[in-house]
Amino acid sequence: MLDLSTLHGRDFDLVYQAVSACYVPDVRRLYGEVARVLRPNGYYRVEHWNPVHIQLADQPARGEEGYRIVRPQVPGRAVPWSGGGANGSGSGTICWHYVHPLHDLIGGLGDAGLELLRFAELQRGDEAAEPGSPEHLAAYLPPFFTLLARRRAS
Image (cartoon, rainbow, N blue to C red; front, side, top):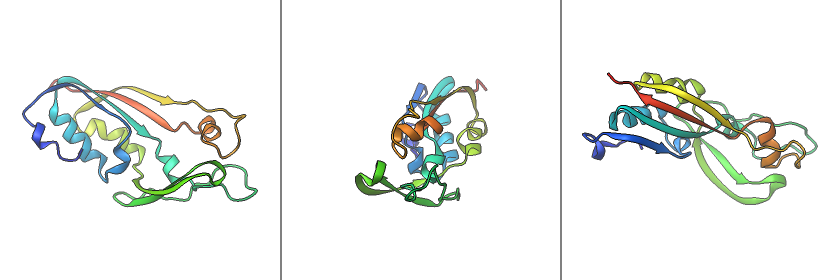
């Protein structure tokens, strides 16, 4: 994602990127690479995992209500995130993610020569679901958002 040099010199009408920017340290560099392979007026549709989800504690503290933010936004520094599910269920696999601030995830598009056309949060939560479950959390904090941008004509 951070080196699309094999595609330089080609112009694409559309670049679609599923949730994956959380795995790279520099989202602005990623946007620059995408803009370089898009034709003028070409579209970029990218989905992001809400960075606040990466910042949350892997599990709520015993007897605690609410969700705790325990990981800071530190540019370029990966943070561990556990795949544990509600009530400690899940694989316990640890992945390393980067917490990109919104001024990079959204504002970085403009700096790369792209104009934001649409922003949408994907909210599929259920506040009646078991507290701590992904469905419950999503009712309060949408887990994903989608951006649609277009490369400026000149």
